[in-house]
Length: 422
Image (tube, rainbow, N blue to C red; front, side, top):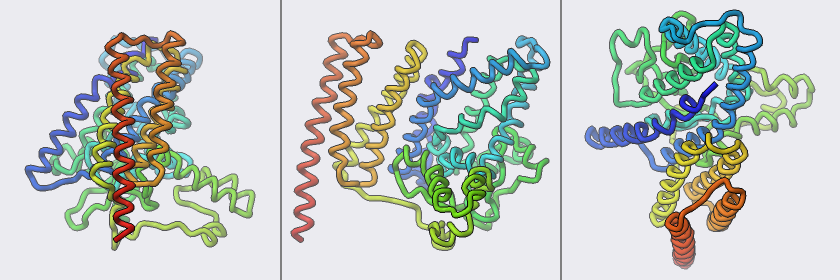
């Protein structure tokens, strides 16, 4: 099965995504409704970038399992040239997605993966790109019925990509209710409800393309003008680290299991309803929850000089991520794995800077050293080759970044000394 096209659709979609984000930014400026914060937007995009590169590895596994189930256990064989098959597969995929999504909110271990998408306390098109990197662990289970029904793997991969692409545009606050479309399709209005943490909206509207599943199965809620939506999750992430965003809930469950006195609780916490904790653990180790009556989004302030530097590095990471996606199918999986690890550490460093943490210079120096070593290693292993011009650009990047970082470190040190003296 040739899955290069559906698995690399994101490469072609990236310019469209950023173009639409730019349009939304302009619309917000013109309408004087700014729904963006730099740190939140970068964090959402960072989580998304790490998700799509690690997804090259996880989608390979998911499609391999699907292919095995299709070839060994399918109950029928359908002609992929049939338009009706494509339409039926599109609808069937969304129904499977509904249950994967719903249980992703209702079961602890599944919420650990899906919660990444809900952690942003803003709601804009960057939120759409904020995706988990661990959802593949159990996500494939929900789509096995399609393999058993005989939906060809290529058809499955394409309708899955189409479903995900559809969901991008509904992550905006600029589009109002859309009349009769609200009864059939997922729209910005009914998906805003899904991202709310208000009690009246919590855990509603799970559809990907069609909202009819929610209306039929009792999980629909309509957006109301009477109550302002508060976005995010009840246990705030309070971090700009995309790696921690993916690990937070897993770590919390591990800690709760370790602190629990009963073995039943240690074993069952993973499949309990989302938010469940052993009574003794909840009493001894209470968690800070969002105060919806006095809600203040998590925010940090850093020097403007540091903001300019990290914005430059973040733009480099966008280019780097796009390049990984464009060439990954030409190389072995370990190649993508190595670059994804480097990308993950780079995004961690950017989050570290967004939080204004001390020691970011040390991490940046390590990142540049590892980046240079990775480039040399891949050339030595005949996985990459650079022209003279490309070597000059690469060397120029390291020289510029190192000089900029040194100057930044000295400037911030002087600034800290001046603040201390006052």
